[in-house]
Image 1 (cartoon, rainbow, N blue to C red):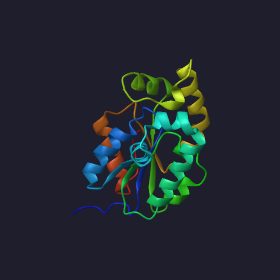
Image 2 (cartoon, rainbow, N blue to C red):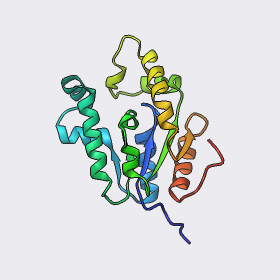
Image 3 (tube, one colour):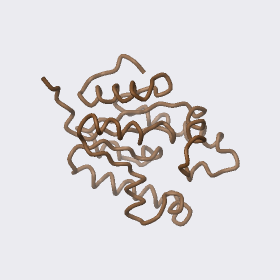
Image 4 (cartoon, helix red, strand yellow):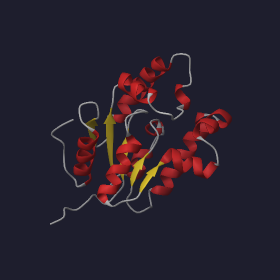
Length: 180
């Protein structure tokens, strides 16, 4: 007998490089739900890359787009969502999606996030600085208390991608974690 999934969105949050998009796609496939990457959707809507949009309009304008998209998605059928790492800094966005949505923090250290980003081709606008490692540590310090407001946390450094996916799928079925 199939177990019941949560009625709302499953939202993956975490630092850049935590694997929100990669894990989100895998989880969505397993759950038979649509997947939405906020950055990809915003790029589609504005006709520009996030990096270019940041450069032309600034972070505040980008955050406004994130809030507007969140407000829109609050009334949409359940999906797996991967907002950008800074989405949690927008006051009230988590409350817009829960209940019934469930927010899962994919926890990664700033050091591991930087290693992962170094292997990626994605331009991270907030890390385009002389000392990106220091910036990542600062992002962690600022966002950590907000990530702790998630409903669950999965330590992505101690698990394989498959194990992270399994853990998040379990959470989507209303389970709790004994690992991570």
